[in-house]
Length: 163
Image (cartoon, rainbow, N blue to C red; front, side):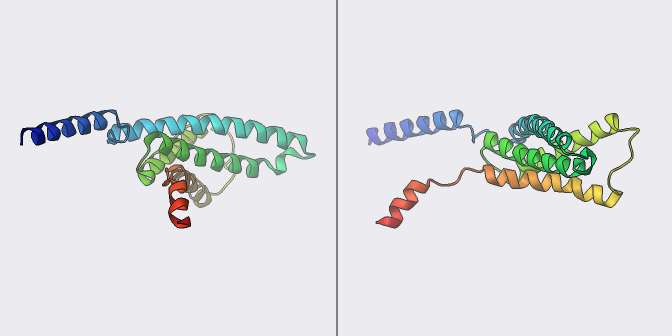
């Protein structure tokens, strides 16, 4: 009887150690916010790289102004996809919330940048279209978040099926 109490205490201590070192145990809002900020930073870096590559592609064509909007939108949505993917990979859970939060932060960053940098330029899209395009940033980030979720071990599934 004494050994069962000792075994239960050992099991409790093991669970406490596992929960303190488990990165998914700290899944509060602060951890999700840090993951979303990390994903936003990765997304901004990837947007810089993609937009620089897009600028080289546009300027190599005969009329660079024809592809600017298309290349900018493609690079923006790919970078928001990367943003959600990186945020969920760091958070390791809650793809919907983490992807949405990182997408909203990324969208707000680009809105603030456009207010400061593009104050004298005319809008490329009408207001309703620009709202839909900004919502698509969040949608792409959520999709990237779901792509970043860790799936089950496929090797174990294959072994079970082949038996």
